[in-house]
Image 1 (spheres, rainbow, N blue to C red):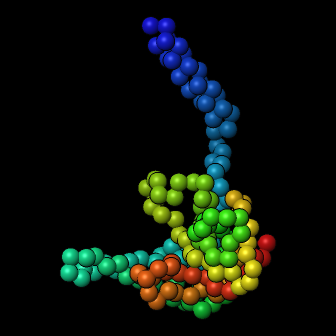
Image 2 (image 1 turned 120 degrees about the vertical axis):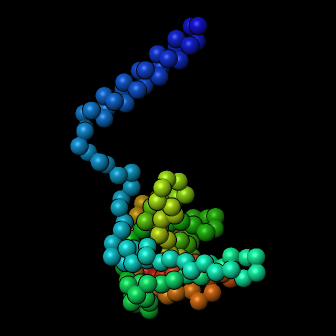
Image 3 (image 1 turned 180 degrees about the vertical axis):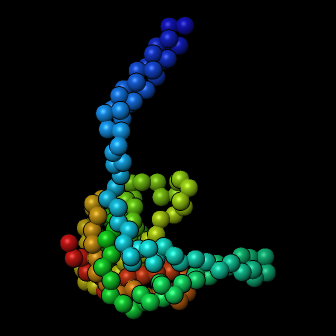
Length: 160
């Protein structure tokens, strides 16, 4: 009985403290990360998949809408968060996302956030959980089923 009372008291106090903190800032909608979406990310986010069947197997083929096709072979500036593909501190190839890796990228109702694969022009970039900004050329991977991401930024350079 004492344990039950103790647990209920703890839950009540925790809830009360949380509500007190929220009540002090009712109109603040503070994001848990720096928003990265810009026009380039908006276009990238429009990529869809055409689903076909070959035998008993479903095949997902990327479909690039006109807005995204306009960016192919163009140099763009893209802010985002590093998502490493391998272990280590320094990376010359990695994914760039609008969300930090510390957030669960497969939870919630919005699905997987937009990401592109980055190939640095030269050298490596040190992993950070802070946002970075890159400049590079967007290319589409003609055979993503054989590996690598559908949308890539090649000859990328750090600009911040």
